[in-house]
Image (cartoon, rainbow, N blue to C red; front, top):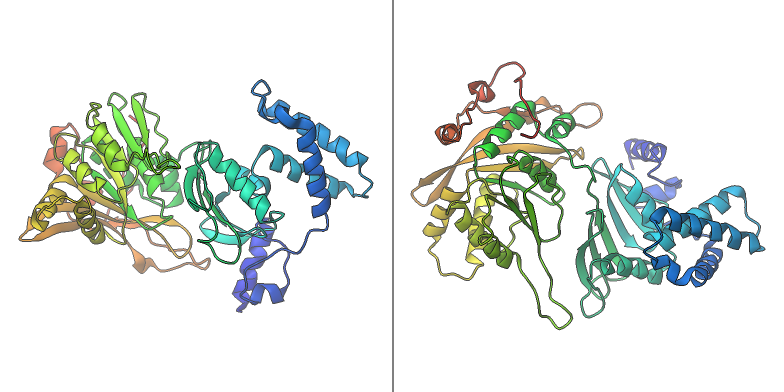
Length: 469
């Protein structure tokens, strides 16, 4: 291992995200596993006693969360005092906090759910928990007692919204009350280390355009361009890989929709956080135990067309619903937004074409491409860079058709030529290519005019108003 690896370990420990570990553990290449906890038997005993004493009061709706937490901590202190096991003050505080989190929350991962710097939590085994901070992964000291403990927490998570996960249905997607997305996988799908649990957190206060400019995800002139596109009712598609920040960008784009319009959002798991007053949310429903009752994204898109929407926002297109979304965009629902998994804007077009064919309708390929070129106006491609940051790397206009090919032109691209600084971060920013979009006249028809300086290769700072209308 190079010395830079140990420097990163030291920085992570200084941030509180990495437990003490020997060089042998760090350089072995094996998954990080914490050492056995001598207090585990005592924790289990006190936990059982607490649950027996509290009983139904744990689910008493008349108690506020603060009152319930105070009651739990009071009983915990009393129970620990009755134990004969000698404990230091630090051990007593740690046990009290851990057991309270287990009874009232989601056990060892509860502190990470409260930590605003943690964006993702990954449980690879009961004693192997990683977290993501600023796009980088760090092992932690958190651990579950055993597989049964981890399974109990998973059941508690998915049970809150009426989902289930067991041997007959060994994986599940769900969401927590705060909007965080949960994925759990059980044996026999996961081999050797017990259930897998992944939690993707979302900020309770959604990021604004100003935040993304500060983070370097987009530039100020790009924010001005997006505001004009959304208010001018162009159809935008946000593409990128897993964890690239597509949903966050979709949230920001949606914030520019005028408050007087009726918006219908359709999602697999509700994640969008719009603040417009006329906002209706539809969410996918999985099949029940008998395999019946599923309401697919495609069903929701078709139903949304009957709800008199001004805008339709699809959290992600991943199947046959792509056909219905394109039909909506081409039949009077201008200004619609969605995301798609793809490696580039060109790949986004290819994936849309494939997903339309997945709808099971016999349509010639040329007709599908014509639908795409007529429906989608702008593709915003976002990537998670090697330095852990999320950046918009391409903004591409869908120009039309030339023969059998959907033609694209880049309006903004990321400048990789600026290189990397001493901390391994990209110095470059997204820059205009100098090409002007062909939809400028369409925007003008909606009362939105694009400043020509937005597309100039050289120029000063563009003054903009990035606030919601």
